[in-house]
Image (cartoon, rainbow, N blue to C red; front, side):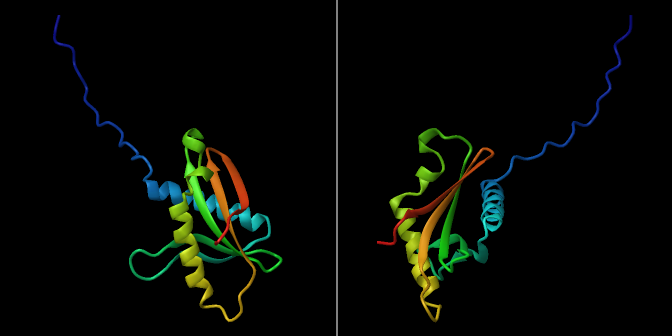
Length: 135
């Protein structure tokens, strides 16, 4: 009885897990498609105020009635801890409102505005219109 022959082969390359940014970008893509299907038009994506400490708005859309819609997209794998929509804290809202004011300063006339949240959770999209106020 001889020694068994062992054949060594290279293991297939493992696909690295998606980064948080990649997952977030995919959720933004899904939200954008959902909003465009509902008739909204994209004005800006990932709008950032200049400098440190400012804010960012994931999507700025124009509704068919002319309303400027500032959209925060949130992704969560599960509904634990309140889910995606519940993760838009007061501090996050404040930064979004700050960025929205900065964006609106560039406009010659101020359109009606609102702040929406699109929550992407598993394969479900929940669109919360007027999710919070600027005040």
